Image 1 (cartoon, rainbow, N blue to C red):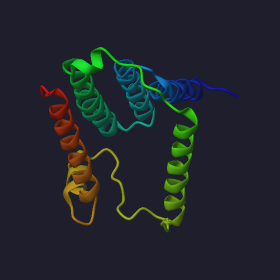
Image 2 (cartoon, rainbow, N blue to C red):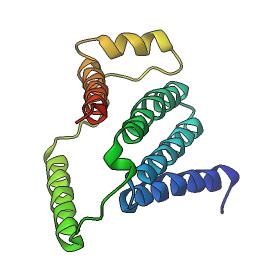
Image 3 (tube, helix red, strand yellow):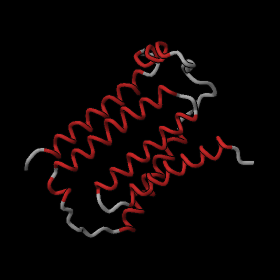
Length: 165
């Protein structure tokens, strides 16, 4: 039986996945960036349904506010992106590359030994404890630093794309 939370979950999941697919198949990079933002909103709504306000805030501020907006700004200041040229694309080669990449990543994931219990227990509703876990060497310090590295690479990419050639 379909309940209201289940229908909302399916609706937000459809928005997130559907807009992610539209982002991939978009012909213009500017349109793909807007589909990316919609996909991020769908994921943020799923975090709201999971009652994870910290993750919702991260999704909204870091991804929508950071990655997506910087992407759109880079597209807008780059002259070549505003007047796209048609290039020949081979869909068979793209599909083969996507399938091989997906297969390799799936194979790598399946090689990992998954623990039965979380290594570090996740606190419930206690933001200072989450902050301590994010910077603890035995906690989530490495993923936290990788996210900051990702945002730094995005910023450098935007600056590279925006510079006059």
